Amino acid sequence: MSGSGVHLDPGQRRDWLRLIRTENVGPRAFRSLINRFGGAAAALDALPALARRGGGLIPPRIPTIAEAEVEIAALARIGGRLVALGEPEYPALLRHVDDAPPLLAVRGRLETLARPTVAIVGSRNASGAGRTMTVRIARGLGAAGWVVASGLARGIDAAAHEASLGTGTIAVIAGGHDRPYPRENEALMEAIAAEGAILSEMPMGWEPRARDFPRRNRLVSGVSLGVVVVEAAERSGSLITARLAGEQGREVLAVPGSPLDPRAGGTNALIQQGAALVTSAADVLEVLGALRDRPPPLAVEEESEAMAAPEPGEDVRARVLSLLGPTPLPVDSLVAMSAATVSEVQILLLELELAGRLERHANGAVSLTY
Image 1 (spheres, rainbow, N blue to C red):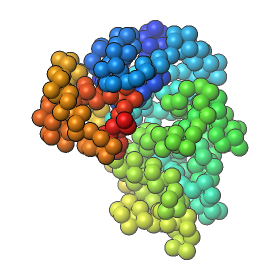
Image 2 (image 1 turned 90 degrees about the vertical axis):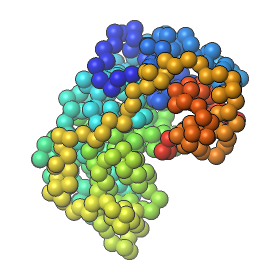
Image 3 (image 1 turned 60 degrees about the vertical axis):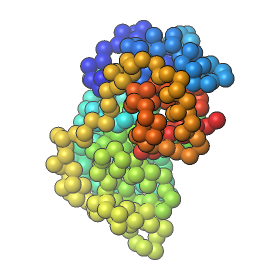
Image 4 (image 1 turned 90 degrees about the horizontal axis):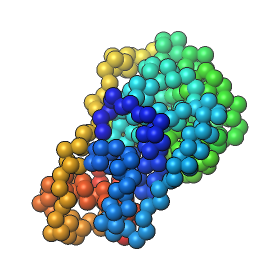
């Protein structure tokens, strides 16, 4: 599946939606399936057999055509649409992320997604000084032509969005568009839909759960050239965003704080670890200005040749399975230790994932769930 040049008719968009909403199909499995079978319709037909080969006890549930059409219609009723990876409207920087969502549900002004973007994140329990700093940086960035992205949480996120309404802001949410969270930011969410853009990879009606917020965070950093952390305790979710930004090749910037304030523990640690120290929009622009027209290296790899390879033999299957277990193992180590080809391992991992037996971890490691 190429990162650009996708053109979907309504039926293909519906099939993409059915495939990504299928049980056990995430962004990486989606991409492998499209590359292997040439399209979502053929991949949907092949799913039950693939899951059986992976040892699945129950076939993955595939949404019906009617269910997909209901979701598309519900999104349209609130002024949203599905944007596919590779379409011109899809955020350009997000295409460079390995687990970029195949489909984004978008409300608002699509042109906002085409502008240079920087994320500002931080504590939900923000201090007055933290809010003031956030507003100053966000307004300065907006005046310089930058869009500010954040996660629509209370505290620093909300302050960043509010300060950027007139110049451009992107909110990335962890639930469906009809499930604003937190509820206190519902009015802000509607203002962003009118003046900026709201993104979600989750279906309509989805209530965000704790594990959905790190997934959201990778999109906050993914649409941005850099992430500014204003306030963050040592166990703050904002540090997850900073870590993901580093893994995605984005710049990490942090505002220092008093060592006596627990809300500055995480930001001060980031600076000690090499994050750029910033106290103004000018500082942010000094770091990011040279990167504005130079996107990071493409992380999404073409797999079409590998996925077109023949099915692995039983001996290869047995060797790969014998090496997998509950302890995460890097895929490149799995290839080397099994003496299998990359394509053979990719095919087997896809089958295990569709069977619900494979868990993917950071840095390309995998483990078996049973």
